[in-house]
Length: 107
Image (tube, rainbow, N blue to C red; front, side, top):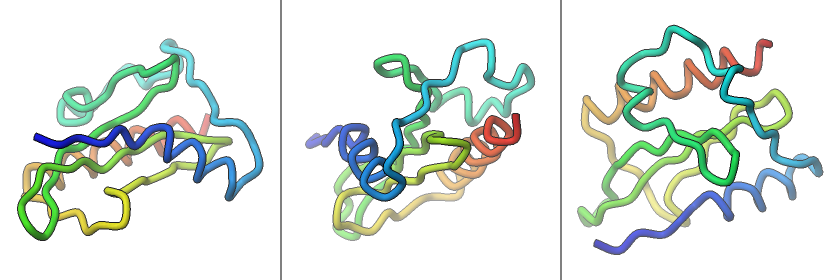
């Protein structure tokens, strides 16, 4: 399986677009009640809370869609230069991750 870490790309894209640092979310700021689908894909990477939802591309290679919070905005990063194809279960995970990230931006 070929896997490309999209967090550095997400940070660079977010900083280039918004000209601000990527916000590190303290663990205590994560909503206490989470959708289990989001909890399955949520993790901390270098102190940054991210959600990674596995998906496929148009030729069935494994890829992921990444969600993170930056300056009270939700950043959604797809596979670099590709299309993300999600199953119903993967779409549920993405929906849960986006809902959880949106709650963090409201604080």
